[in-house]
Structure formats: C-alpha cells, structure tokens
Length: 195
Image (tube, rainbow, N blue to C red):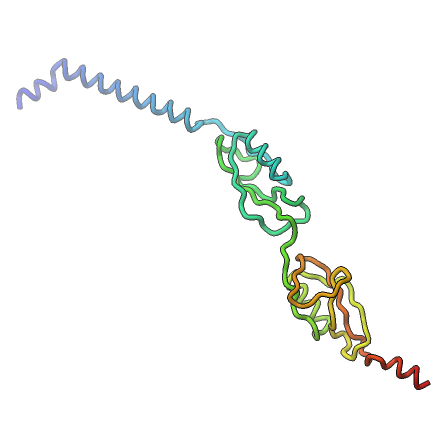
C-alpha cells in the first residue's frame, strides 16, 4: 500500500497525469471544431417565399438556397393561385434555418375535386338549392316548364347538357334547375282549341 501512495506522489505519475489531461483537452477541442464544421454551427439560411411559384421554379429556388424539399399531398384547390403552384410552406418564408434543411410544400391541385350530384328530382326548388349548396354546387338559374308541381325540380342541366343524380361535377359548378310552373302539360293547347 505504501508503494502505491509513493507511486501517486512520484514525478512519473504526475507527468503521465498531466499528459492525459492535455490529450483529453486536445481531443475535446478537435471534436468541437469538427462538430461545428459538419453541423454548420452559426450558419443560417433565410427561407425564401415560395408562394405561387410553380413546382419547377420552387425546385430551382430550393437548390439555390442550399435546402431540400418534400411535396406533401395537394390540398383543396384555391382559384387565387395558379394550378400546380405552391400554396403553403413549412417553415414559413423569412425563418432562419440551417443549410440542407428540408422544407415541406403543399401544392395547388389542377382544379376542384369532383363531387356527385345529389338526387334532387321531385324536390322543391328551395330544398334542391340547399342540397346542392351543401355538397358545394350552386344554382345558376331556374327554367320553368309546363308541369303540375309548382317549383318542383323535374330535370337539371350543366353547361346546357342534361345531367342526372350521381353524375360528377367539379366543386363550385353552377347547375340549371328545370322546375314546374304549376300548369298541367298541354292545358294551354286545350284552352286554345276549345275557343
């Protein structure tokens, strides 16, 4: 035991202890410098505003900024933005991020998604308009024909062509309703013949 304490007090041990401490300090310093270089410590890139850019323009701008990107599923169509342009980005424009950071994009689809026309035949005009609005369609105009059911929907048209329940139209489309005017078909002709 005495030899061990003598060894701890010896000049050789103290020199080796000092060399070990210097080696640890040098290793820590080298490791910190390496980490600073590989993680771009203190180096930030300002995220550009990609809104309304086409996907091709966005790709070029992302590469120029030294960033990466990922396109998320397209969301609902926004008519205020060009088709296939950037709707949203995360992180937002102006944020400072490290180089090679991934930016997530939401792209405007090519148009409104298509929805099924509800069955509004033999429904009143008022209820039919509500049912159409509920699914994202609208009434462009109402045309009346000689049919007994006043304001009852007998047919529908889209862009001048007859459509039927279940047909698929782009959301926000405007539909023409063909409703009855409360007159029995042919009654006007009967009156004229009897005079």
